[in-house]
Image (cartoon, rainbow, N blue to C red; front, side, top):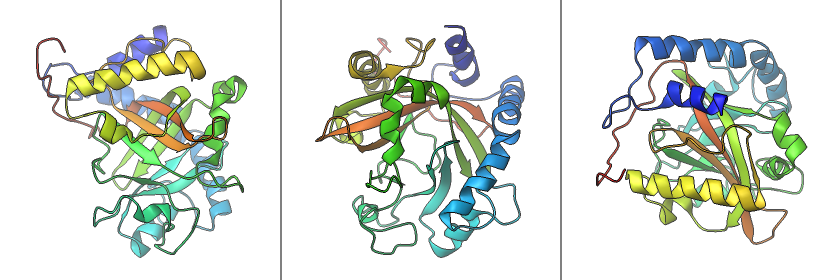
Length: 271
């Protein structure tokens, strides 16, 4: 519970209507980034990106990065997702024309590709400021894209992989991976209205109930999530339960530039 309390201190809303980060919080987040992202992780990211065929490194602080290379060729790329010690090291895209199916059959260079790409739907903001950024990817047999998400259902693997990183042109975000489970193959953004606190709370209830039944939840994170947090949910086809989807959920614990911010519509006093 100690870590979850610490997490809430760093990411929670201080006032009921508007999420903000004060100077003390920014210093804390920068410290987290230094500890978890820039020492060791930066080198791993640079090494791992060589396997993808992109240039140099995924880190936005480098003069030339894989993200920069993809961005020049495809303006739909807005961030880069990296999970250390996995093959998950890809740009994140959002189709500018609002076609949520485009990157199911095209890669990050807009070339026809059965493996697709890593993408978010039009209903999500590409500034990573939504309560829940739902990021999709396929699980091809060769282990690319999001195939390794299914490994998070193994407790030993889950315990060994604690952080996911999202690099943007002007920010670096750190997410603590708190849960992994299987769920029905329905669209999260259609099932829950994350523009309201009530919809956020409903999804939080799903995390606790389903991760407790058919998945894993990080020790110390069994409670404490609220609509004021910022999540990423990585989704892919389940290899454990065909016809369902595997989801891996991370909670924001590091926001280097202090830009992750949103207004929360509580709707009624219950939330």
